[in-house]
Length: 168
Image (tube, rainbow, N blue to C red):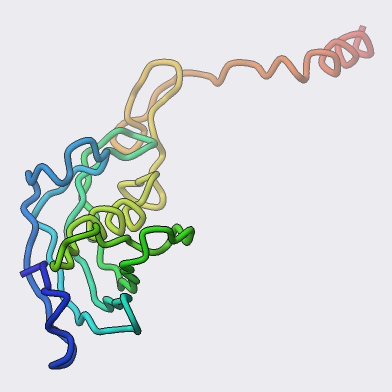
């Protein structure tokens, strides 16, 4: 359950746990490919008048392509989360989530979405020593080698001309 009644905090903090399906519309437009549901847990407690604090975790597997060789790979995302919710509609603190006016339910789902986006690696490697693709022929250098020579670096042209002149 990822929703908590705001009026119930007089009885103490609430334990939360649940999952958000990988194909949930909540993740529409997110450039993170999910390999499994996002598991969410933690505790929501009152943090003063009209403020609430969620301390917990979210975990899932992210599907991505290696930025060097384009191979499909999966990464585990397991992130500690500390989020503040506020009823103050005029807050200017971008790290706080505003609880919509007139609602008596604190919904963690938007925070889950944003925290997942922040936790996911932007540039994924299949492994640290990935050799990538040959820039000339496209061969996956992790699997095969190729006979392509790297293109000459034109920035060195003036020095190469001097060397050629010296050798004459």
